[in-house]
Image 1 (cartoon, helix red, strand yellow):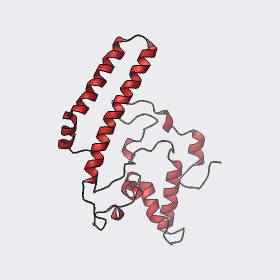
Image 2: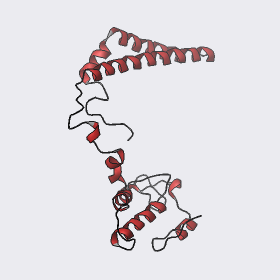
Image 3: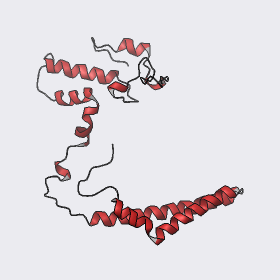
Image 4: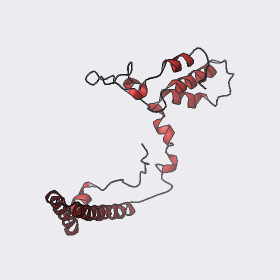
Amino acid sequence: MALQWCPQMDQSLPAKVKADLVERANFVEINEEIARLRKRVELTADKEEIKTIYNKRNMAYQRRRQLIEDELQKWQESQPYNVNDKSSIMSRLTFFDRIRHLDPSRDKLASLLFLEVPLRSPEGRAAIHNMITLYKENPRVAYRPSLKPKDGHCPVASCNRWIESYVISEREKQLTSIGSLTFLL
């Protein structure tokens, strides 16, 4: 969800460019070195030597990642970029606007909260109802409505595992009710 969207730049290499990169001599050499080091780890018993081999393998992985990043940077720089384009980033919605549909109570509250209406109006009551709904939800884990645990168990019939982090204590159930505004202190 945190990946930012940019229409002018691909976030990964196209298949043809990636295939060409994989066939390059230096890339093939790095892959072979990684495979050799992996086999050496399996055959070695000395812990100090294993550490050295792991460090060499990590350096090889880093060189391979660097080759991919350099190729991606070349690819991104070759793409045309027009700031005045209608599909520019500035015209895109904010992150919250893109994901707000995933949490209906936050979505409704975002649209109702800044309306200039009396608190006892239908919109004001709906805003309070959504605030209470957000207050009653488990803050540690956010579930889609169809995937919420039922009686503390996974809703998938084949799983039905106990989900401990979602269980609400009886005291919390008593103190938070839809009909009245009671806050847990």
